[in-house]
Image (cartoon, rainbow, N blue to C red; front, side, top):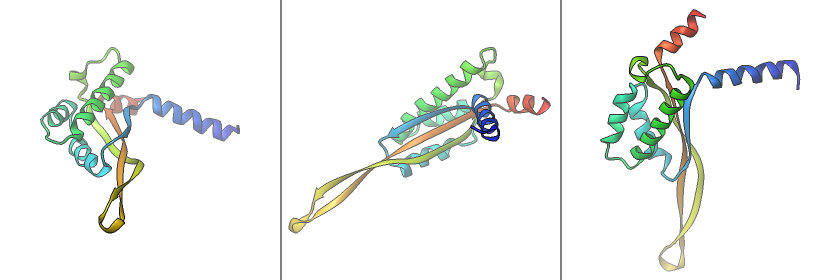
Length: 139
């Protein structure tokens, strides 16, 4: 491995250590339905986002709520001395990527067959606090 490649890899590794996120892979709902829920919580303070998800009628909101709680837990493990209430955590990023699509066949009239696509997705939620950003700028 060359020096530039090693330096770039180390830089990316450090950035990942300072990023607080959780990933849900192969969730069996369509990405379009999941994006409705994740767009609802982008840029919102964490406690308000949890309330929105808890009282939402969407099926996808249950899994996103669990994922957000996981991202908060990841933030707590990396910042043991800090408290959530004082840190003003917010959802910095929330995005959905398409995962594999299962292809199924449904019988149709006159001996034909229609293809059914059962879609799934990957969800990523990144949590951050404004204090941490200010402290990094001072350094």
